[in-house]
Image (tube, rainbow, N blue to C red):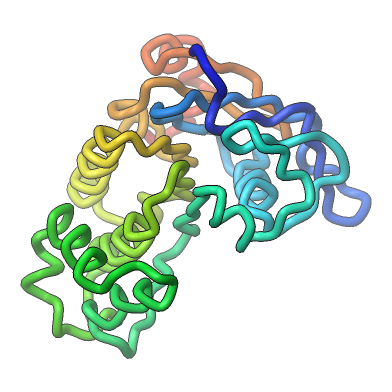
Length: 236
């Protein structure tokens, strides 16, 4: 892990009212790496995503993105620094076609041809379905649209929140295979997952959250071996 990490979180705390949910999170994601962030429900993973992506303010602690201190930055500023979040639950516009959903990215200044080219290269199925209303597609296909939109923004760090939520295992495997291909282009990825095994297959590193803290970090095999009771919990 040499050089400036793409993401560095130091002693991060966050609360809802008086209830402290993040209790001193420390996490480092090296540039160009895939890190799986695992842990049971209620461990604080979703709150951490909200804080990293600027949707929620921390009560204390620091976040550096590519070496830049981003303590009070909003989502727009973070996007300019290369952070892109694919939130839990597919964020597509159901009454627009696949193509129209993708072309929304062109309003953010990305050339329309580049958006479609990226999407169809990663997900040929979207090319076949380009005229179909996004709301009539399967959950997995909607997730492909959401991922394509994110990739069109040319992110430095992609935050994947519960990619597998509500999807069939075969589709999850297919999506994670694509995540592996995305990292080959130099994009760093932090994937937050409850279902550990699939995420660990494509990860360089893994971290485990429990009780609002990161309780272990290491290589995937080592984490699976030492933390399986915490991360699998019957949902592997």
